[in-house]
Image (cartoon, rainbow, N blue to C red):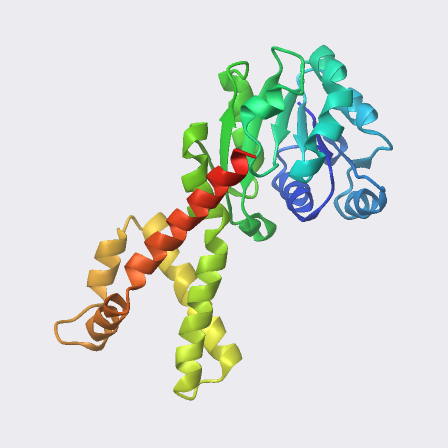
Amino acid sequence: MKVGFIGAGNMAGALVRGIVAAGRFPAEDVAVTSLHGHSAQALAREAGVDVLGTNEELVEQTGPGGLVVLAVKPHAVAGVLAPLADLLAEQGSVVISLAAGTPLARLAGLLVPGQAVVRAMPNVNAVVGAGMTAVCGNAETDEDQLDAVVGLFETVGSAVVLPERDFPAYTAIAGSAPAFAALFVEALARGALRAGLPKALATRIAAQVVQGSARMILDGGTSPTQLADMVSSPGGTTIAGLCALEDAGFSAAVVRGVQATIDRDQEMARG
């Protein structure tokens, strides 16, 4: 199976580098295009993949049953997909859209009936191979095709299959939450800076702690509550800090932030 990327921005670049490095797809089975060609040419030189002049060439080279990744901004989706609709149907391609806030029904409406379409939402952490991606296929996407898409995104982190109705919640805790996590690291560093620790060192320590805590939950099977209990002694420093955070509304503020993100995502999806 071959894969083609229409668009060569940051996310496409992360995916191309990831799948080639992982050996999931040989470089000669990967092709890219971009609007002006410059970014695609740079990516092709770096990763050793093919750069093509037109999207039609890319679909043809990707071949029957190939994966065609639409890595363009949401406002450009219609202009890119509509001219390719007949060719994509002829090739039996699997169309994978990375366009935020663009539902499967809207994508399918731009294509020939019966076209396999997958909506995928990777997050920015894919750039360092630690991404989180949710995928959802339409009724025309079979299990093997969906497995191939999951495998594609597993080269740059983890991937899960979700019903489309859960995408707004996913967007909040995966797509937007890297910003929340960054804000938390910044706040930790600022607190240590206030106590006299240099800012760069404090940021490094805080980021490492967040990374290590996440690994204990993901790899060590420790629940968030268990992890908190492990470092909280009766009458100790950690529980004093936790109580101060809760008194300031920490958990409630996070929940409100997640809900605000969900509300905005749903608003955008309604157009």
